[in-house]
Length: 104
Image 1 (cartoon, rainbow, N blue to C red):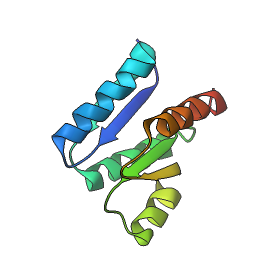
Image 2 (cartoon, one colour):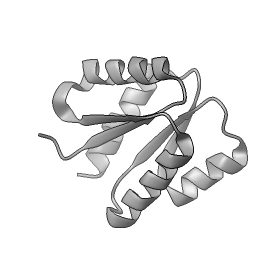
Image 3 (cartoon, one colour):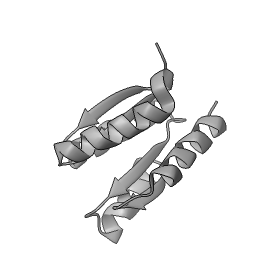
Image 4 (spheres, one colour):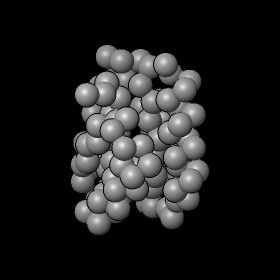
């Protein structure tokens, strides 16, 4: 079992399934994968986790967030990068790889 997790949040189940499948295909069992359909709830979870585990990293993919919401995620959740939809999977994977190497 891994001690690293990826939380995938989107209000569309098909996006969750697609992204989770893409990440699992690339990273296999290097992570545990969790999904949620509610962005506000996920933000609260990430903020709570960040308080307890300050080295946790988050990456956001959004199709709807305005600049204020993005600033909030960057400051409160310690998000290191925000991708706008549609995202480029290779860039997302490279970012995840980079984060994993930087927080060992």
